[in-house]
Length: 179
Image (cartoon, rainbow, N blue to C red; front, side, top):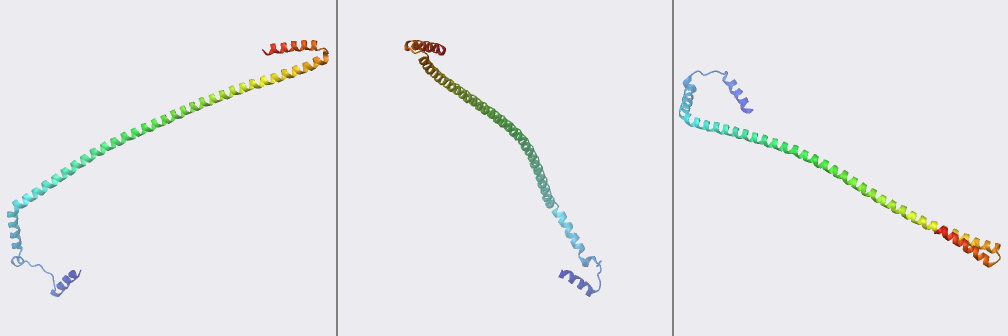
């Protein structure tokens, strides 16, 4: 910033800005001759450098395009593999659901069969106990009937002989009914 200010200060002291049209004094011819010589002598050198640079750039661009194409191809393959993976995942999920359903059904069937077996055992156990109780009640009734019959026979029949006959007949009838 200071240099910029100094330029204006120098211009202000000299009084004006002007254009120097003296070609020899300005050195324009020297610069033009130098540029011409450089172009003439350096044409082959600069041309080969520029050609190498151009071929390097073209090769770099071609390599970049090749890598882009390869990357696009890999991307499309990866997308295909991803879609296939999604298909496989959905198949696995469906198979898992089906397996769970089958397991639940088989477990339900096993539990149902087990319950049926338990109920059948309980019912048979109940029926056997019912028969036992029924036979015990029947025996008690028979015992009571025999005891009453014996008491009535004693009261009714004074003689022991007639009482025995009556009791034996009654017992035989009851035994026949039981068997």
